[in-house]
Amino acid sequence: MAESFAYTDVGRVRPTNEDSALCFAPGVAVVADGMGGRAAGEVASSLLVQTVRESLEQAPRPWGEEALRQAVALANEKILAEAEKYPACEGMGTTATLVSYADAGVDGNAGGEAVWAHVGDSRMYLLRGGELRQITRDHSYVEGLVESGSITEAEARKHPRKNVLTRAVGVEPDVEVDTGRLALQKGDTLLLATDGLTNMVEDADIARILLEHPKDPAYALGTAANDAGGRDNITAVVVMLS
Image (cartoon, rainbow, N blue to C red; front, side, top):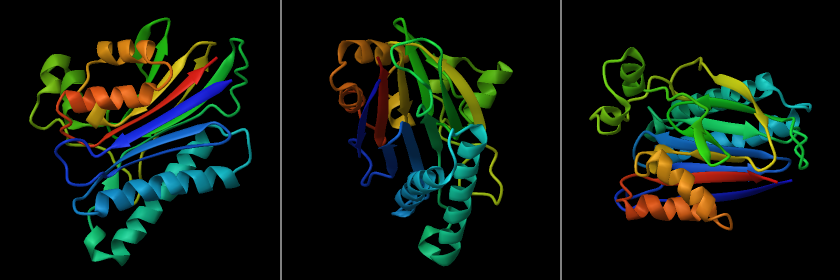
């Protein structure tokens, strides 16, 4: 069985919330962090989550990596078309991080599997046995510096170009989508989050909060990000498997 929790908040600095999140049956979670200024970022992230839902609902199950990749690609097309139609939306885009655990077969036994897709710097984590592990890789300028050894993870958290993305949905005619599969076990927790959470709360504290607040973990994470300053929109989706 799986229980999902979702939280999104404007934070304490930004005037509007350009994040979007969605959980829908049977067992899909999506987060998106829009960009583009004014209302455009909100339009892009909203189009992403809506299109993912429509695409998967029309696709045959079981949903594999290609189904998720195609859902993001379709969202890419729709966002570009919207930007071309409405000048106020020009330049908008969004991150996309989604996971399907609909066909994982997690019923209290090991051996289940989830499928995920990812573009941008929102993230998916796995909490297992008290240890938090980042599953996705950020598509950002700073992550490239970390991977090359030019800066450390600690330096990356404070880098002035931390928010510069190398990939996003709705920016180019073609979008490269990372996908993968994740073996699941009883007691696992999945977290999908925008950088408004992960930039404000250290991974160790995220793990602690997830363990200490099983009844409303997404809200607890959002509260921690706001307490730390809430410099960006904050979104978290938590899926707890039992």
